[in-house]
Amino acid sequence: MMYNGCVPEGHTIHRLARDHARALVGRVVRVASPQGRHSMQAEQLDQHVLECVEAHGKHLFYRWRGAPILHVHLGLFGSFRQSPVPPSPNTQLRLHAAAATFDLIGATTCELIDDERYGRLVGRLGPDLLAETADPEPVWQQLQRRATPIASALVDQRILSGVGNVYRLEALFVCGIHPERPARSLTRAEFDRLWQTLRVMLRQGVEEQRIVTVHPAERTNGAQGEVPLEDAFYVYKQHHCRRCGSAIRAWRLGTRPVYACERCQPPAARPRPTLERRAAAG
DNA sequence: GCCGGATGGTAAG
DNA sequence: TTACCCTCCGGCG
Image (cartoon, rainbow, N blue to C red; front, side, top):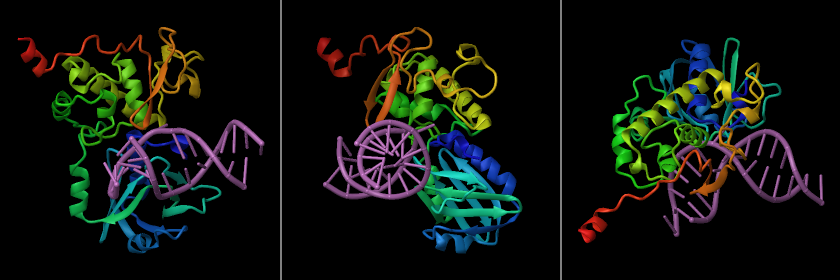
């Protein structure tokens, strides 16, 4: 299973946690590092019983009976492959129990950590949209304080966790919010809708193991069978708006590509005057 | 065969 | 802001 064969956002991580837990928890797991770069970690984990697998934002944590916590972050290229044929020579870590084999490839982080580091890592993450009881209030508080573009704030994992480049752009489109609007310019109603939209999108991604944000009624190639790539997104890598037909604008925000329909997502009409300006005017 | 991207993140300057 | 880490794949010669 390739999990899209693509770059992971929170939905991929949560799906992996679920699948790995079902296949491996409670079992003695064989752990090896075919590539050799993680032999030390493999030796420490081999033949231990896996107790649970947790996902926090885009981080994975594996807890073992009598061994340190395994921390995995897939980064941009990382993936797990299930019983791959043929196996990649670059396999960093192989987890195997009973009939299940998972190979880790290309992860930026594959390390053993203690509870203190675990606490620090999880502690610096904002609420995880895929956590059942994710609390929107601290996120709303943070956004109200920030002048940075909302698109940038949405992928700041300290504010909220699990959202990546595709989900942020798709959710902003669905909510009619321009990516460059200052985070603090959002109304509470806009924020609530954005929060809800992201939660629904991510949950759906976990189930479908793929990002498809376009509503079935808006797909051009019918709603049956596998959704073709050109029917998956509203704006990400698109050229024309599916709703109004205008050109999708593509540009760079920081280091990341962003896409928006500036007709469906109008830029802020008038920037709110700053305190200084108001003082000068008064 | 080489080059350039790609849904991420960190750390140095 | 920039460099860097990780892998795979398609485009181009």
